[in-house]
Image 1 (cartoon, protein in one colour):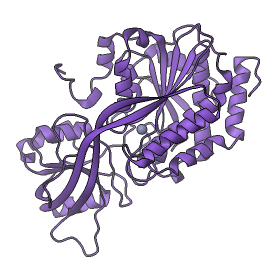
Image 2: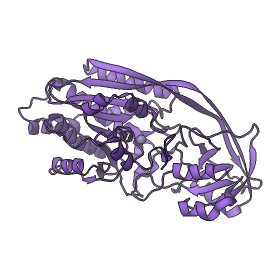
Image 3: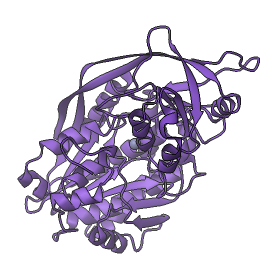
Image 4: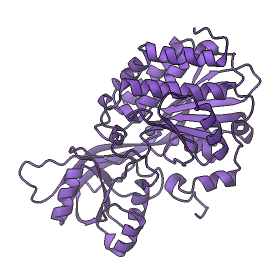
Length: 450
Ligand SMILES: [Zn+2]
């Protein structure tokens, strides 16, 4: 246990521990060694057990599984071919989660190139996409101007397209992946490599797609560790999703966030009962499938539960670049608090009010709860963060010093929140929260217009 007589000394002690001990890095590698943690696989289950054993091993007294139902999905076959490929050419293709299947034996499809797949591209193409396989580029996920894949998928479905191919913008012959949508109608959708995309666009004509999928009722578990404070304050929720995709090691996304969150647990368990506010540490799953683990949890909270939460600090892709951004999701008052808190932070940190829809904090935000997502590589399209959602999301993309810097910066914000007796920001009303998330779910909720 770190001996500290003041909040400043505690932070110094904790950042010293992060830097000098091998735990954070070992935890990160340990998670990656379990495999990519795709929902419904033994690798996801192993990660849950790994996190649970770590927390209990460090003496966390209140650790529980929070189970929920979701629709499971599995792909048994995903093959792409063309009538006359260049000699020796092999396609690399990955289905998007919740993609529909093709008939047994596959289907022949005429392609149509919609370039980046902007709303304007879809509008110009109009009825020409009907019955055809739409080809669009994937955007870098972490840029203010990026267009999320779901905002390309949904217009494809609505326009009557027969399939969607998402082209990885990065060279290297590896496809990109992601999820389509957790509900509603679907079409076959898959990620392909930049090189395959260029070939299909150049040759035009027909492709043959054989995609065999299965859906079934499934159950998963978030993990919650509760570290009570002095019993006077509210609750700070620290979160990270432990699930990943069915390729690579899901190292950036999100072994980085889970490892840092576990490091916070390791260092703060000895301080149970010492802070003004309570700490709840949530490890969510089914995040990569439209944020379902955190959605189920946030939906289960009563209005009183919601008011009890002072902050959600969500860690998702926190290394891959030395540049860290604390995204404050439209909360100007929270951004001001974060800027003040990070004034003396040695790591390369920015505070942004940009609203990110694509991680678990969005479900806290939807309930009006002040929410921050820590992210590396914001607006850095060439950073290694762009390898997430692909077979190249592997441990070599993460530098040990970047991970330690992210943990140090996260600790600074977390400790300040745990010690704060004043609200960090004003809770937002339902209407205000909805206005912050115009693209939540990327379609209007049932019964509501957008
Ligand atoms: Zn993630």
